[in-house]
Image (cartoon, rainbow, N blue to C red; front, side, top):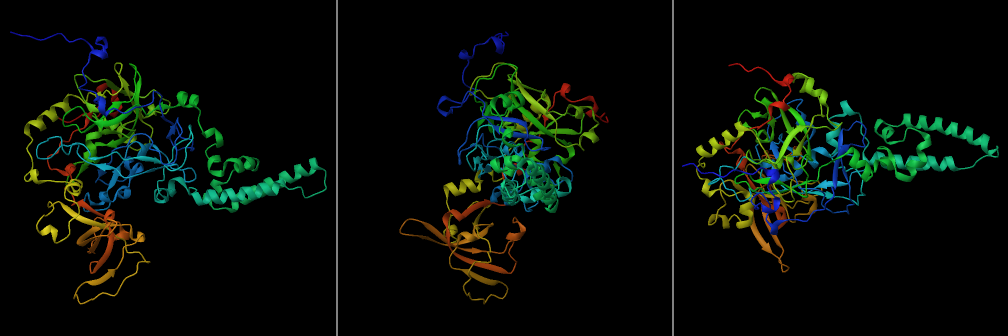
Length: 598
């Protein structure tokens, strides 16, 4: 006979009565401030869209916010909005070995997509990410390959940062030179330094009293003359320097005090007060990342602090993308597809790029957040009235937000209902899943490094690496590298010898053969290696000709690594789970929908 209890609704069931199955265990909990530390708001750079501000002071070297995920992207499409937030493979040299080409890119949400660049004010940088599958293995876990293993990309302060400052990170000059037809010449740190010197000299000149004419009469004539001269001087400058210089002669004193870089974003007023941030910004600091409480889900997002019902848990600015562009002609749907929100009746898919929101996992029974279109003035709600082809031509501006369905307590995992189609697809995947042949022998390069270490060519004869793992060394053919004479009795290869690896060689992670290991009296380990010809997996300035080999001695152990061969990472498994997250019907505008043929 039927037996089942009647479930109390979440809003009447006390938090103190709940078990901890959706919470981080007490011993793993971090301590967080009750106050928001990072806000998203209009950037202080004119026409730059949104930016991120800190509400606390940071010291040089401090970690800022949460480490983010990285998602390798194979697809290259013209006028794809991802292009404006993607990063190059040089974020981590191991990324060059994801596939056989170097034209791929990295989707880096959060700090990689929301933070702007200002060459005169940059105050943060990225470090190296971690790579692991949180203990899941392709021999036994159907969730492997469904989420990215690249995670915890740290954000580090490169100088002391005041509370209220906007955060800036170096995009590299190439990002701007490729967009000069859209943005013009952007001032670099050199232009801002040059501008500061010009302003200081001009200000010194204007301060001199060089006449016996009555002060009031002379001051008026002098100021008019200097204003005319200042305008003439700016026009003589190149575009980048002209943009670094203040437009008005009357602003020189302010620029001398705060610098041309700070003046370019509004001077001291660009350092936002707490009141300004609370009024004009949205907190992007409510969540942190830990291992999900949902089996097979990888990592999840957890609450740092108490979040009342009906509060914005996190804003979610989104990229509007064409559904078809997530499909790679030889690899099928990209991993990026799993992080996109879409509706079956619309070609428009939405990809969130805010911090930590892509770690929010699925729970259809007990979701604690919902999605809605943002109520912030930063959201371009006029995009919702456009037809799909028009929306896809637009730039940034769409914004959603995750809103709490009930009170959420510290260290609770955040859950959103991905939709019935997603759930059915996942259940089908689990029911039909089986491991690929040889899966039980699989070991990532990172795992092999931890378990086996670096083995010489001779040692590998008795203890070989898995077939997907190869040794790699940092070595760049610098013009300052000293080459010793080497026996060139090889009929095909030109042989070069480098007696000692030096710091100037510290670029280009390339395949190498480990010939010998030596340990000094101080227990420092060095390797003698053979660098072989390689044209794949390397940027153009790292490629060595097919007919050259380099014998390099005394390579430090921390410059020798293991890498996976192309397409052997979990995300390239042939039957890895792929499905978009369902956008609720009421959030997909009728103008975006298209009738599907039967």
